[in-house]
Image (cartoon, rainbow, N blue to C red; front, side, top):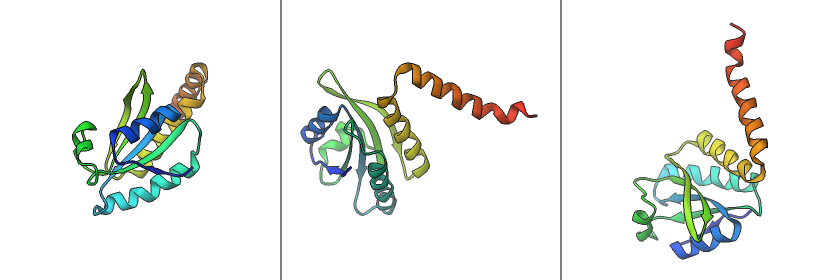
Length: 138
């Protein structure tokens, strides 16, 4: 899936409304951590390509009004968004260049759109068992 670039809240709202969910990358072109995370973001967009989720990036310096609208304190910032009753709702946020965290959050976000509640419960239960497995062998 191709990463879309937006410059305004209206453009963002239109994309999120179309798919129902979006992963938003807020970056500044001069920031080295943003450059590195842009590459990670592009890989995630290709990996998790879906009709159900948009991958969107926004140059925050080209859209200064959005800094306050989205409450951006530093870059890179990643927002997991969904469209609900005519508004964009933030589900999760990651601040900083943390590729593993972004990958995990994106995977969970994408998976939650494709899985039923029952399937999510099974998945969480399975992760819990795996997480505590080392303790069981003590």
